[in-house]
View (cartoon, rainbow, N blue to C red):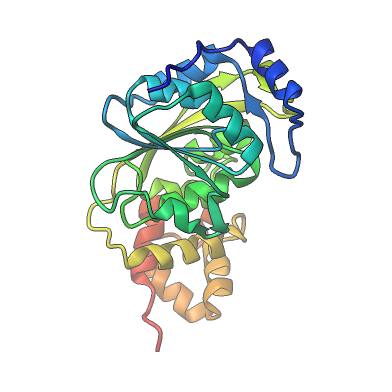
Length: 291
């Protein structure tokens, strides 16, 4: 095995990128986390340990990848930019339990790339630890949470606004469709803030870690997930309207909406933004089956 070099400091790694002619792409949403201390902290915060199966998305120049590999996890690192991938591979050397995938992690907004799906386990625990590109963080988390075998935990560095949406509770301003979809399967909390000066280029928005731990709703069946997501998306398009009005618009029938709300034991004057995952699931189960 080729021994990796010591972790280069921020300035050295940035200089190596610039010397290689690399310039961050706005189109790809590239804000590279280059600070080794921040990367090490995120790896340790994730709680992953030797032998755990881990997916890293947006490996960049390998700042976080290195610290995950040092923990001796079974790591798959995905990077869309071939220039960064080559540099990361050169700096990290040959790691036995590290596999690289050169791909866009999302085939579409609602589907993982085939190359990524192929390496994810069909059963058993696995984890996501990543500095996610801002442009894909919300859709990617939604897709990962709906896999047949979803991640046991996800520790992700994202735009602070997205982190707040991930961790929000019903009735809070940040509570929305993403929050409600994730809350059905995950316990969620906010983690450490990461300063803009630790990225290259500096992002214009704040960044924060969010942590999600799998906690399946009792009695939930996989068949209910598509209907739940459709209901959530429909209601949260009208999040501040009264529930009866919002559900009527979603179903196309005031009478059917009123019956479902009554069966679910909900108040028709409540607003969708006030409903948590439990009441939303109860509402789904109260809908009349399609004729």
